[in-house]
Length: 499
Ligand SMILES: Nc1ccn([C@@H]2O[C@H](COP(=O)(O)OP(=O)(O)OP(=O)(O)O)[C@@H](O)[C@H]2O)c(=O)n1
Ligand SMILES: [Ca+2]
Image (tube, rainbow, N blue to C red):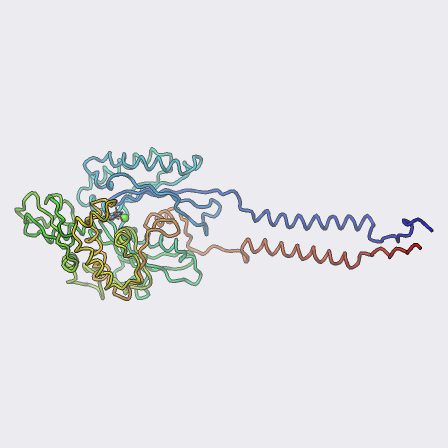
């Protein structure tokens, strides 16, 4: 019989041309898939940084923000990577020793040098914005406020960062940037069909801000309360107001001034716990432009501040710090300030959060009446019992939570006209997705032009979608090719049986 090898038919596919074509085809498919997969691998992250110092009335804090370098102009998310609380009081407290205001910032600035990579230091913008404490100092003693700014600017200039200036924010800016921050972090600005925005409530030591969009407000009534934005292709007409002297520390002065009108030596205060007593100086109490014109004549040097712990009396006292007697507009909040109808949800941060969080009252699903009852019980608890139960809390803060909680409820209901229904639209918040709620982020986004007026153009497919489709098409081609080979590749004829 002939040798087996000679029995094989000559295979027509085994020509050099078909083999080369097959190899090229397979290489091309493998290359296509590899490129698609490699393209989709995240690039080594490159970040840019920005630093904002919030020089508040009661303290200064430094915030570091970071964002992907490639996408800074449109959809790149800016995140807070670090914050540093400056030791000591707010810069406005250094009026008599301005250099110390500059000194006080050094520790946090050095910390920032560790958090921002060295090679980025020079290009990292550094801003300082001062709020109500410096507004008050500037009203009271503009020379002293200039000196504080000089000292602070000198320190910031010496840092390796790119110092962009230190200034006082207007109340409108403070309110509007707080609103931008909350809505940016909540992703409410990039929505194409204009998802409802959320209002912002900020309670500081010396001023308080309310900002929201109301469909009943076009800015024509009381234009000074109107701020217009065009962000990501949407127009916003924001109502905002900042009440100077209505932060919690200044309202405490207003309330005490109301209670001590006759210059008595013992001032009974329903906003402090029973058995709480503290000696205070009249001159210190009245040392603020918010109350300086009310100092009683012939008052003694000091007085005893004595708590009586009565929530409803405290509420009466606090109602007295608001003036409801005149309203030159169609409707007002208080002190003759226009306010349109409340609308939508509200994020309430800074002291709103500190206080309500301490009181375990951040859950606004709790009916307003129950909140008041709980607060009334807390206020009537004697001071020694309170200090026993909260040994880890700073005494100055601890003494004031009954007062502050009552002020917050009075401000919201009597001042801004929240009722038992709309109260549940408030969310007491500290952070959103890791970044602190406050004006600083909105301020930086604005000054670095990070929020475009128009929505950025987006490719028809998201990147991952594009890669997936290319990969799937490549796989389908491979399978079809394999099936063709299988179908048309001539099989070996059955070997003849050798008997
Ligand atoms: N754990 C805390 C921290 C702060 N506070 C109080 O909260 C108030 C406001 O703090 P903050 O929002 O930091 O005010 P500032 O920014 O300093 O003041 P402003 O915005 O008015 O300039 C201050 O009275 C402070 O004593 C508090 O009760 N509990
Ligand atoms: Ca503040």
